[in-house]
Image 1 (cartoon, rainbow, N blue to C red):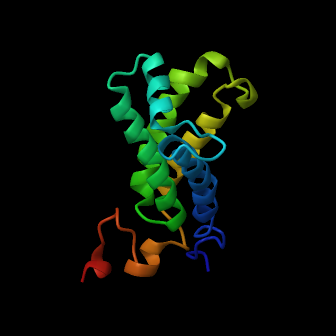
Image 2 (spheres, helix red, strand yellow; image 1 turned 120 degrees about the horizontal axis):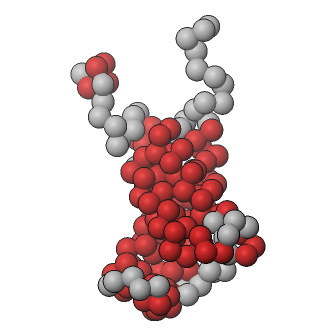
Length: 154
């Protein structure tokens, strides 16, 4: 019994995927489609990035918007979770430094609290993978972003 994994181990990443996938999907919908509580559309988000001095603001607006929209969907489905985790972590670190750091810590004041938490959840998913309930495991019986080992590759 000592070699058995803890009961919640395979299910913890599922909760992390929901905790990260939902806010990413909502933010992505706001940026790309201009709908929801964070609605600004690509034009509005591009203008915001331009005001921060980001080069090629429209290209970056599309990149970030699609990462958040498609990445949120992939996280919820449990596909390419490690890859999306790394990309979202980078996205949130950039948002933390460029936008939220000057506002201190509390999220209510526009501080780093939320983006830092989302970055850390994304890192946890990059390290853990999708967990028990994922399309990767259901369709392929393994993680897609990790090469098969020994018995799995035969």
